[in-house]
Structure formats: C-alpha cells, structure tokens
Image: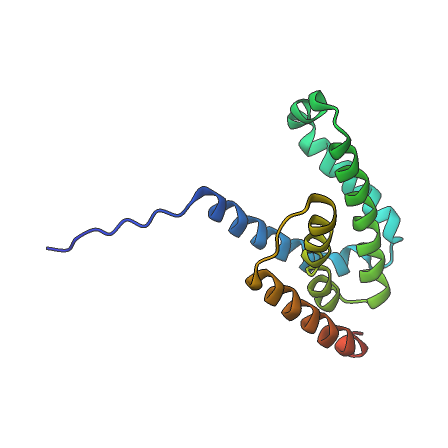
Length: 145
C-alpha cells in the first residue's frame, strides 16, 4: 500500500513564488515595451493600466491615509521610471533586471539606520554576495546590445 504524503507549503511561500514568476515575466517584457517608446511614456501607460486593475482594492489603503503609503507610492513610481529608462538605455533587460534585484541591499542599510533592525551574519553574507554579483554584472554590461 502506498502512503500518500502531504506537503504543506506556507502561504507566504506560495505568494512569493508567484511573485518571482510574475517578476520574471515582467522583466522579460520590459525591453520590448521600451523599444521605440519614451521610458516615461511606458511607465505612465503601465501605471494607468495597473491603477485601473487595482482600483477595486484601493479603498482599504486609502482609508489609512498614512505617510508610508505616500512614500511607497512616490519612491516606487520614481524607481519604476528609473528602471525603464535603464532598460531603454541598455537595450536589454537581462543585466538591468538582475542588477535592479539588488535593491534589498539598500533596504537592509536603511532598516539598520532608521529602524534599528539587526543584521545577522547570514544577511551580511547575502549583502556581500549581492554586491559581488552587482560588480560582476556591471562589468558584463558592455556585452548588452
């Protein structure tokens, strides 16, 4: 008799795996979206479409009316615009997406400074590896067409 094994993944793991897949698809299409178009125009169009799709869910966030919501919105929009301009300038998304994925380094540093979060040795090692990877990717950027 075969015993059925049940593997239960935590819900956050399912969500982050879905996000990783979607970010991968998003990154793969960014170079195509910016070809022949102004990067800010692409960002504007994307933000309008995203806003319309997410509008039914916005009421809870707007009810909070908190400064972190404003900060997330403004910083995210500015980062989005810079990212698309980088992809447009590079002509390829592969290196830009990989380098852009190192933003948690800044998150760690700011969390240490402003929110007094602690940094484990594993996180410090991860930051060091990410910095090393960024250096390698930036030196490889000359092969981007």
